[in-house]
Image (cartoon, rainbow, N blue to C red; front, side, top):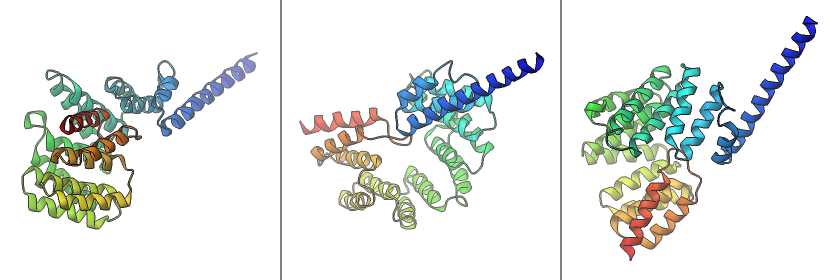
Length: 289
């Protein structure tokens, strides 16, 4: 009798484990298809309760849907279940960062500080997590000192990036120089990054955006054209080129077309939010009226 009970319990546990693996596998397929609503339907409580991997995937899906509160809730559960996972802390920082960007002025400082703390923890856990290092670098660049930001902190962090990714190091140094209004130095580093990765559409976009911000529109258009030859349908290229046109109040019809294409594209967490594209589209429409 005891043997039969033991066999029954083992079989039940195996079936439960198999079912959990099955819904998680199906959720991953939906995530890869950018069906984030489908991921939520598969993993929302109680389905993902107690499963840190499922909570992390659920958090990513909520992030992509723009529900940053539910995203941070899911990642808080993920880090509670696996406190040594750098990726989970990084995503938790990203979710708090977006909450800070979209919250009221009273809540924003607290949420921003939580973003920084989680980015720092992610980097402590894995000093080679470049995505976490880059997000922490951006935080130090943009946040005021009373929230833990600072250009000196960003510069020190950039030195950690140098041996890991020299191209990214030049990009970060370009951002620092641009922030300090050292524009010759910024251009040097943007060009170095692009020259070291001539087939990278991202590095071409970085240089073109910089030239556009400097009012050097003809030069920026040449580099945007180079980026389009590398990868014409990259969402960030559509957004940044449209943004340059709107800023210069030129080619507004083309800008609207680019933004409409952007809004129909499959975006990643690193792409500008759709709300920003919608704002630019409205601005382009008003300027062209």
